[in-house]
Image 1 (cartoon, helix red, strand yellow):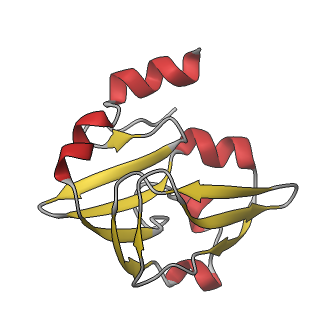
Image 2 (cartoon, one colour; image 1 turned 180 degrees about the vertical axis):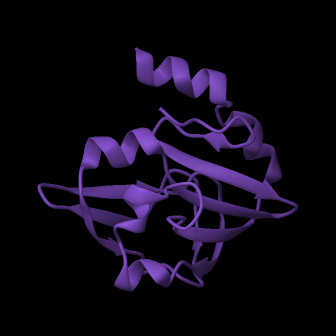
Length: 126
């Protein structure tokens, strides 16, 4: 199981890479494994400000559809358009080419509520 130590995580199995006031968000290696083969990523909130915990999109796998939850309040400033033609990048490269959105963080204090790699590992191991 790949859980990069430099990233932050949510209980909803999303990873967050913080760079200044910008956060890149995707689903974790664990999540993509649980979902199975991803066939579609839907994010219709580009240029919207979305509150922490609200749904910003969904990911569709062969057997299920799962909501994607905003890890931090902020404006969605970019969607990974590569996922339109190759949604399977979420499976093959979840932490690099399979990222989903970039957000302009509204409240940096919320970063403190995210899990570090060790806490996320404990979460998925039960």
